Amino acid sequence: MSRISNIKAKIKTEIEENTSRIKHHIEVQRSKGDSSEAVDVTQDESNKAESRRVLNELSARNDALNKALFRIKNDTYLDCKTCLDEITEERLEATLVAELCIYCANKEFAINKIIQPKHNPSFRRV
Image 1: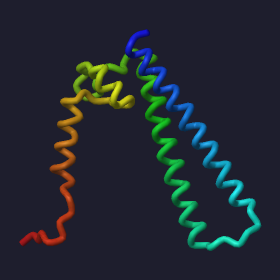
Image 2: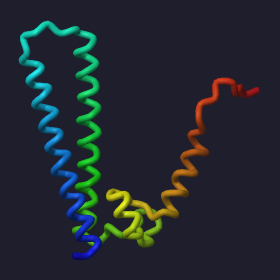
Image 3: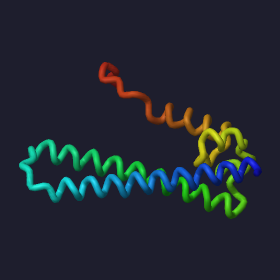
Image 4: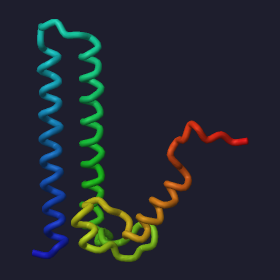
């Protein structure tokens, strides 16, 4: 089995696991909604917000994984979306949804750090 086939299998497995977690999370929330017990409104809202966050993260991850499967199917999985150089299989094994080669990813990271520096409340412009 080739490395790309192994990566494809990992992607499919992760999608299945995430989908199962999404379904389970939804079922748990539905069962809590059916409960006739008195629930603290603040705690209930906090749980709902956390649940939405988890569901959004899992859905976003599945979207990225499905996009990676689409790139594999179209023979563009190894192509960096910025420079079109090859993304190493080692990088793709470590980061299944990588769309950038390591050079472009580092460059993008550096640019984002420069454009969006950490907030420093003691710094004032004159």
